[in-house]
Amino acid sequence: MTRLALRFALCAVLPSGVVTSASGQAVQGWITDLGSDEPVAGAMVTLLDRQGREDERSLTHADGYFVVTASSPGEFRVRIDRIGYATTFSRFVHLSERETVALRVAAAPEPVSLQDIEVTADRRECRLRPEEGLAVAKVWEEARKALAAAVWTQDRGLYRYETLRVRREFDEAGWRVESENRSYGQSLASAPYVARSADSLVAHGFVEISPTGIVFWAPDAEVLLSDAFLDSHCVALVPDGEDLDAIGVAFEPVERGGVPDIAGTMWLDRRTARLRRVDFSFVDLNVPPWLLEAEPGGSVEFVELSNGAWIVPSWQMRMFRAGDGGTHPLTGRPYPTLEGVTAHSGRVLRAYQGDEVVFEGGAGMRITGTVRDSLGAGLANARVFLPGSGAQATTDTSGYFELDHLVPGEYTLRFTHSYLDSLGYQPEPANVIVQPQASEPAQVFMDAPPLQEVLERICESASPPKPMMTIGTPPRLTVRAGMLIGHVRDDEGTPVEDAQVVVMPQAYEVAALMDPKKARAVAVGNFRSWTIERTAISGFYRVCWVPVDVPFEVAVFARADLDESRLEEAVSLRDAFPGRRIESFTIDRQSPHRSLDLTTRSGR
Image (cartoon, rainbow, N blue to C red; front, side, top):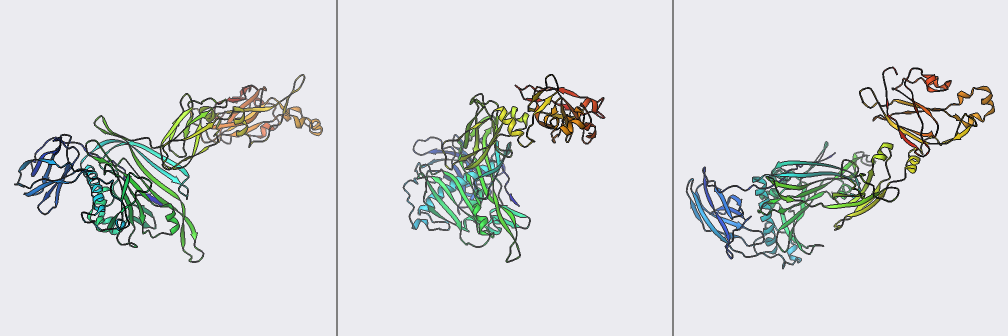
């Protein structure tokens, strides 16, 4: 059993008004740009004492205003952190008990550039809390600013969110999507997910393995900034790989081989120095190596809002799904197998402050396409969907559809339509591949088969049709090319499962009439044939190969009320079951598909 130990929520900040401290001592003021004298919005202001200890922090408002409260009287100054700019410190001020001191600070507009940093072999050395002046310290400092803003936002603010959570089950290769289940919702919350405390994770591990299951814990911004994490993980610069506009700060455990841990990379934009994403993988897991082929790990994205608040717009985590492999032939112990990969993800679709939309997420990776009818025209109102309760869409008047918020992988795409549903027919699926890093949606065309082909496919498992003969002047042959479908319900409209629908046409088996021995020994009426079909749990029934252009009788019997011996000698259903409601019906050769809903009644 594999389960995800995350609670999905969201983070944000609500600006507060200009206030002074009523219960403690505080510094309030405004931050402006030294070069332009313009207000600096979204800067992180941290209150520091003489020993450099942090007391409280806050983000500046649109007008540059801030207020930070000290826990006790003393001498303090504020540190102003702006992503992409050098840090600025104010002068020290003395705070008496319950005193509020006003302070105006001009922040130096000295840009921090990450574009000229080259990752060389010596810079890839993993260092524990790198000292100032090293290239890795310069990059880490910018990542730290974003993480600190995310933590502050997480602790202080609330937005209203429209969210999407998805659970996907992949095959053991982690590529084919076997099922996808989605849930949409709205929430007011403070964090994208809640991790264990950093001290607990470092001491006991990011993965818990027990006889009852496996629990994976993802890191949040607070964990990545904690002393416990920084004292047990070193950092190093890594090349930008395929993305030339990014630079990475890798982190990994200092001591390997102990408790389950994480290693990963924080990716920053070289031009703006803003944190984009944190990728991580689980390491030092005490599991068979073949389970690690699932590449357990995840990623967390970060984005800055216009007011300087940082939120997590999306996150995802992959875990192996272990199966029971039986008993090992050499050790005699049970061993697990890699059954598949389970992925959980969350995405913010929109974030609101009041009625205002302050963040709107993109559509992500997509599949687009067209469903066409048997003549090649677009089929409107077809439902296109993925297995499970996953993505689905309804085609427009041209047959076009779009599925969004997907991930790389191979999908099995299905569609249906009301006329296909009425026949109980499921068209063949289409396999579609969403490529990694795809800039354009994957495209697919799906065609609905002609009605006659649908009927043939539905009834191909039934007995092959044989011609029947009507008695008249002259006698004539009739073909079995029709289908009768419908639902059976009781007096209250509830579907009846396992009801028996009997169809008896007014025609005779040609093969029996052609048998001289049977023809001499038995009356002609006994060559009448009939069909019995049972209803599904939904009350649905389907009778294949019904003769066309020939009247037939239909009756329904609840459960096991049918006495089939009465049919042996009967010329018609009315003769066999006098007093029972009998429907008479004829299917036209030109329209071989007809529907008939039936009702069961007590004793009838």
